[in-house]
Image 1 (cartoon, one colour):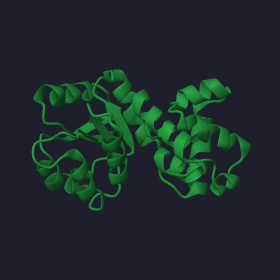
Image 2 (cartoon, one colour; image 1 turned 180 degrees about the vertical axis):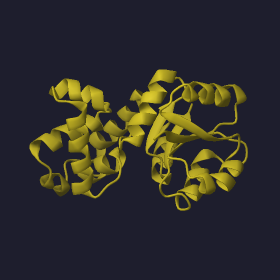
Image 3 (cartoon, rainbow, N blue to C red; image 1 turned 30 degrees about the vertical axis):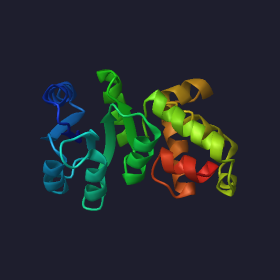
Image 4 (cartoon, one colour; image 1 turned 90 degrees about the horizontal axis):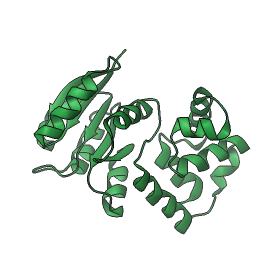
Length: 208
């Protein structure tokens, strides 16, 4: 079954470029394209896409506020920020609002597609600069918490690599295990920590 995608982006060239490229793959079905947060807020709860690719800087309601309002009405939908903003305030505000992924607009189209797949599989894909900010937050403000005690040594190892921003395939290569095994470990990590994504797991395991 195809992964249903909605795109919220005010720039026509970017909006259409994303739609056209994503539509080339039979893995995806673009079910909605919106140029404002207000349009998205009105329609997303009805079409309930699997993933929304969301810009922050929209005319009127910004993308972060749109996520806050849509999240409760469409709990099965995941949100991928797609933006030029990489300052700490915007990053953490977006993640707090409910975004599970955060890509910068200089991300290549192939990487965007891989990131959308990873998000759908339970990951939290982020551009390297964004992942580094979260790593720095962990390093500066937290040590391992008691929650880490429930994890096996291998699970702790994988969570630390997630905190460094590594993708599933990179963790697979580094630990010399299959990506399927990585996914199983990460699923168990989320279950044990009672979290839904990478950011929540890192915050819980290492302290905010």
